[in-house]
Amino acid sequence: MTQHTRYEESRAVGEQAREQEWTRPSFGKQLFLGDFRLELVHPAPALPDGAAKRGEEFVRAVRRFLDGHVDPALIERTGQIPDDVVKGLAGLGAFGITIGEEYGGLGLPYLYYCRALMLVGSYCPALATLLSAHQSIGVPQPLKLFGTEEQKRAFLPRCARGEISAFLLTEPDVGSDPARLATTAVRDGDDYVLDGVKLWTTNGVIADLLVVMARTGKKISAFVVEADSPGITVRRRNTFMGLRGIENGVTEFKQVRVPAGNLIGREGDGLRIALTTLNTGRLSLPATCAGNAKWAVRIAREWSNARVQWGHAIGRHEAVATKIAFIAATAYALEAVMELNCRLADDKRNDIRIEAALGKLYASEMGYRVLDELVQIRGGRGYESAESLAARGERGVPAEQMLRDARINRIFEGSTEIMHLAITREAVDAHLSAAGELINPDASRQERAAAVKRAGRFYAGWLPTLVAGAGTLPGGYAAFGPLAAHLRFVERTSRKLARSTFYAMSRWQGRLEHRQAFLGRVVDIGAELFAMTAVCVKAEGDSADLGRRPYELADTFCHQARRRVDTLLDRLWDNTDARDVRLAGYVLDGRYDFVEEGVLDPSIDGPWIGAPEGGENVRRKIT
Image (cartoon, rainbow, N blue to C red; front, side, top):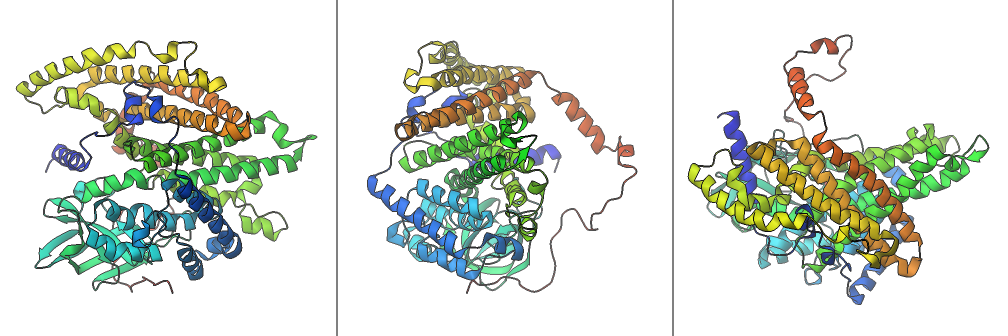
């Protein structure tokens, strides 16, 4: 099979799995089309009073439990979450926050699921990962969306009680390219027989239930699998740069029999189930990132007042003050993005696939930058571990741990690079529907001719809408007071971004999908515009109780974001992409191997891609 054929096969698998229709409105989709539909997100949908009251009570209960029963330093030191912590959280209902009450869960809105994760993530990121991996991508979410009533009644009460679940897609040689999936599920009477190896199974070491993606013939299907089934072996528990308390393993399947009734949906629905699950599953990462950032605000404020240099608290020096402003404004914006996405998910009237992906992308990138700046403000103390700080008589601030823990967020549930591609595909869907065959290098002459007519009708109606809008009117969005100018900027830039995308499609046609750096900047601009919208909406709502203070944070954030957007817009067309790609090719070919001379490689010998063999089963049961 040629490299081109493999690429086309992988692309076809991805296209078959994605949702093909847009049956509900999407703020994000329209934003990339130059149509700033503020009414879709403002006013932000409200929750029923009863749901809000129950949610607040639950978050308070979680706070009390964390404060009284969880020692995050112990979890970091031992690399393990104590069983009594897991059982205590289960007793609160924390493993069934969004599972319906009819199945034994709390049935709370996503907003309070994410507020709980924000709280937990600020205190112990490994514990937040345990909860979110179980509920966001583990058994509960795909069964809620695609399971039969029989499956829901069989498995959801167990999940709600605290039986832990895990999601198994990645393999040693399969990451974001599921067409290469090697794990198989072969029908044998009333069962399927599973064989294969899964890598990076978060919660997999202690899981009771698994969602396993396996190949059924040429397509991929999803199964609920009992983790103690004969033939399942957890070959090892992996260790990482951060999140030292997560139970992440390598799971092997050898002739594992799974009842046919455990197939989720139909054969071949596996990737569609995974992608649809992630539409709401991706809400959890912005929650933990917002929690990290809000914690960073507190540490930056207290430390920058306490530390004095050259006669002033360091926070009064401009070099540090600009970092504090970035941390505080960004923390408020990340919470705004998280809250808006959750309210849209709870409201269920909007398609949030783009918004959820933008939230994950933006929060993981900006959240890491916030923590990196916090470490810089703390200086040597930022690089020193909390345990070491405490041992020598100072406050044990785990800034370096939080930075290490947050690094995975840029990789979890779709790396930044993959998120750029996924969001781009959804954002240009209207163009592809109208003119897809024009930019398809394999389209026939007849298909191209038909596409010309389709595209002519679409662009004749669409392009004139990009000329002017509310963003060009001095009084536009006046209800937002001091933030109105920022929303006018968002509206104008949305149209400018859409024009740039159209020009790129005209210029590169079928080659556009390979202009990944260009497309990444398009998405990053859209993410900034979405965050600016979210923070303005939140500030306008918060001002009723907090006065001008939310406006001040939002205004500063928007000014910072506008500078970033301007830079990205300039770099759409003025960049070194072509040179970089050419140079990278030379590097791969060994042309510059002289650069590698004069060093030693400390890596441990072994294949680049492999799997453990032999050894005992390291799976353990929470007792």
